[in-house]
Length: 146
Image (cartoon, rainbow, N blue to C red; front, side):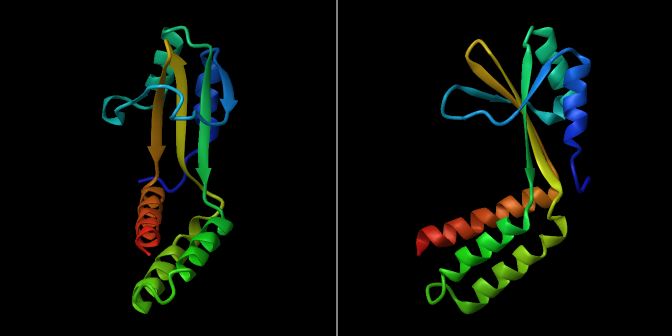
């Protein structure tokens, strides 16, 4: 499994098909969302479909892990002091620290486009990014319970 995603490849594919590229993200609350099943094709097929349907532009958003992201999550864990067993907080911090080697790397990318009021999305993620997001969910669940 790949450890980093090359966003430039996604943008290059879109541009090679004559599509404009907007770097940003789509607000999931503004329109119905449809998600591409990666088992049935890669991003090139997803972008080609946009072209075939006459979509003029794709939106590309990447997640780059930053040291500050890790530090912020560690400080969130600090707020659990006294409310969670000490071993739990220590384990979460250790697990967070294990992601530091990925700082500066692209862990996931979303390519989106709209057609007839529906937002179509392709999402690709590295295993480490999926594991990182899962850990953040664990931390959030503990914070909500405190």
